[in-house]
Image 1 (cartoon, helix red, strand yellow):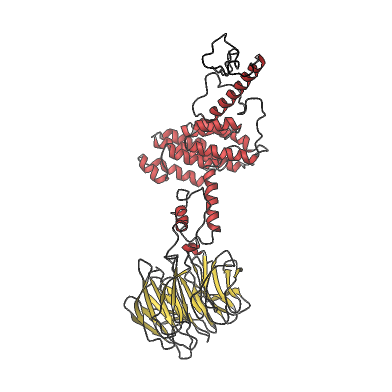
Image 2 (image 1 turned 90 degrees about the vertical axis):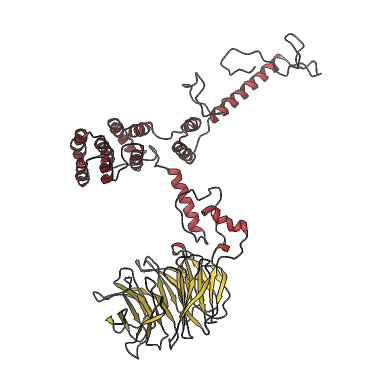
Length: 619
């Protein structure tokens, strides 16, 4: 029988054959082996004891139960109890152990944490921080305040981050605020008043908040207090929330920030998604929908790179296409003088809804009203008319023409849906109501393209001077925002109004930051001459950019990369316009001089493992 090394030297029985008794032949004689000497037996016994010690150490490291009796105060040794030196951990390794320990502690695996810290020789947090945490969670506020004074000394130590007196006051204030609210909830109004007068007020911190806290004295019952204070009430929930706030002010060497491991994992997942060129699904916060065992990757087959439908109802060049704001309809304008409105069904297939006719010069630009009730159609340079259609009824509400010499080639709706601006290269720039009544005009601006910003006051207009200027019709001011070296053929603005996407003659597609007024990207690949080609933002969070091209292709880029991630082929002539469905990020439309409109979507028949690859990580 093997010993644990705490008793007298045992009688060792090694390799004794079955049936051998005390006083029988020396081990090894009966099977023909050389006899075993006493020194061999002693060495073998020593090896056995060493192995026993190693096994005991490993079992202790994995055991989550209490330590064996008599070993509680024994100094910790490394798993190799045979005298080897303990491994010296790097700072990174210690940080990882502490992160794992914190996560296990949050899961309630406290015995496992104790064993991990004991075996590694690390410390999850400073003992003063542990004491502070326990007192806060138990609601022992006087002790917690005393602990906070101990922690103050650690904060100002040379090895920790220097924390200002103002920050220490903030921590004390949060602690006393919880104490005050709990007294109020318990109905101890006098004690709460004492905290307010003798402890909170002398801090001389956040006087406005103290006035709010004093108002809670008038609460008639606990539910009223919790509602007015937006507070969870006395208990673990509010105290845990308080600890999370307090931890943010303490150096990580004293107490780790709350849920630090989960924070780092979320950041890693988000970074992988951001770097994924084809990620085109909604970003789900949290880790429950993600596998941490694989790197995030999306297949190109899930991206709108494949022709799903070809619309051939137009009988001439198709100059423009635009999805409605709710994504349920697509409007296409053609040289054949018609506008066709298409319905997007539940399977993302398009069916012709109605045809709007009578545009004598053809239709080169379309704009949906914010509520998708109306659609405005403009013609090419020699067109002086503008058509405002009621899409639901198919009736023409307004046909506007200020002068036969006008050129109304572009239009944009004001966010209120009651006004719009229109203009052209002959110097017209009008603001009108739904009846076509002229409200304001700006003389001498040769407009190429227009866009109303979400503030309802500023209108962006590209002109013949290779620039985009901002015009305010209320105070009649204007300012330069973008200056290019070549003609701006068209532009569009992101939903947040921060970015502008320009198609620049002979240069291609440029991305500008309108707020900082700087050029961010020059996207490569597209062929852009002096034809008017319209590009667009698209995908979830508008992470992608698409543009037509004179080489008969549709180019798609990730917003951060200047190289295209997809070149869509199928059209046989110049692609004039592209539109990304705002509600279905996997649906893209393109209009071409070949007379067709192509609808692009994911691959119709995806290989099952590859199709499930992204879905399994982002379902």
